[in-house]
Every structure is written in C-alpha cells, then in structure tokens.
Length: 145
Image (cartoon, rainbow, N blue to C red; front, side, top):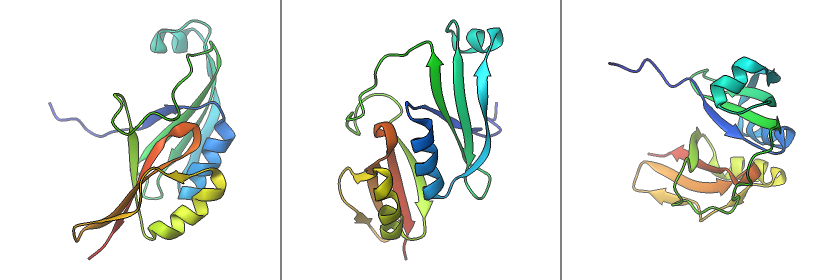
C-alpha cells in the first residue's frame, strides 16, 4: 500500500493566538479557523465533552499543514515545555527557510529561543533548533551550496 500524502500535523497549545502569530511570522498562512465539538468529535478523539478551537495553517507552497488546537474542555494534563530534543514523542517540525538569521530575528519577539546554535551541516544546510510557543521545537534549515 502506498500512502498518498501527509495531510497535516496537529499540535495542542494553550495560547492559540500566540501560536498562530508565531507560525504566521514564520511564513505559514491561515487556511481556516473554527470551533470543533460534538458527539462525532468525542468519538474520534476518545474524549467526552470536547470543545476546542482550531486554526489550520499551511506553507506557502500548499504542501505542508499544521493544525493548532486549543482544548477548552475537557482539561488535559500539563505538558513539559522544557522537554529535551531526545524525549520520546513528536519532538520537532522542520521548515526550510531562505535566511535563517533573518527568520530567527523575526521570531524572537514571539518568544523563540535557540535550543543549541546555528550550525553549518556539511555543505548542504545551516540548521538550528529553536523553541517556539508552548515549548514546540522548530528546526530551521537554510540550503547552502
């Protein structure tokens, strides 16, 4: 069986507006926003009484999407916004950018902080990890050479 495509990656956040602003500054575009609730949603996610807000964001080329979700009910367990890059679970999302230093400067007012440092990886990319909203690790890659 061939997988047709990856539709999107969902990220649960506490501050939906801050997360939306961060990813918009990175260059993603809002594709849609709305409230999600009801019996069908409860059955899909395996929770009772789901009420949530969501923003679907897409890359400018239209091939990559992030769904940012804020659950109003039921309350969920606290996450660890300081979880290291090697902790089990979905750990980072990578975006290719044209100017890594410029992107970092634009994201810093939105709370972005480098996890390590910007590194030239062989003759192919400049790479770095940064923490965005809710401790989400975002990897930036600038093609070189």
